Image (cartoon, rainbow, N blue to C red):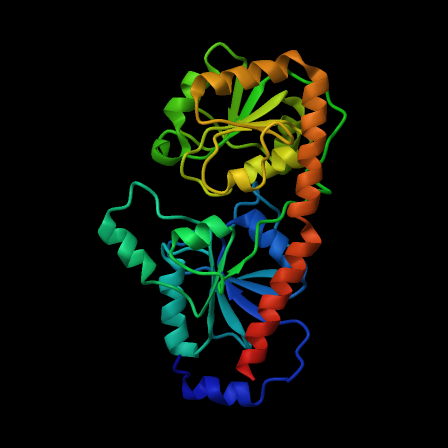
Length: 328
């Protein structure tokens, strides 16, 4: 990486043991960013022209997250955090040329079937200086080895938790843009699977559903449902599954991507890629409340263990501190 003269001078006078780092980032993946803010550092969300703006229906803006529109305010940024290959990483590289800041790139996606081989190769050539993946499956899908860091998403299990609400006995799903993303979310399969069941879906999908009014509304719907279902075919680690599990709900899901790494069939959920089997597991859970409670309790224990908030915070603080130490 080539640093600008301004950057070299700034680094020469940078405090050697800065406690709270100043991280330039973008409004995206709100719940992930909200969890990351719990590391205690300062995050500055750069709002460039036509960019996505933080949606408070997905998460409240943390007190240490500061939206900015000018990169040249008196802020001594330590590095850039990108969470998307589709605009953010390109903007990050432009900023890097001006300010000489290293880029940490958090990759949420995998190469999906709607990409052409040429697009996959292009995406594989665009990376940050430090690359983090949210699952081992994603790391391997992009062709990286064990030297690259994996930090699984974390769920705010103090917020997403079992509540004493009356069940509406529904089969529940949360997906955004469900119909247009049929290639990876399997909307058509979902339609066949829910046929005859009392089903509910939340998420911004024109002609089908709307997003939850608030996080509290979403949490309530998780808690009211009898079974949460996930029909994705190319979504590496759907956050909604983890939120449903944190609320103590049994999950029936396709056995794709990273999902079999944390859902153990018959223990903390059910897995199948056969639609008739899928419907059978839903019916089995609807018919047996004791089984629902048992699977749901095990599901929440999995979230508390595997997707521990403290583990997530510690892992990110280690990455941030290592990058900062590299700058000295």
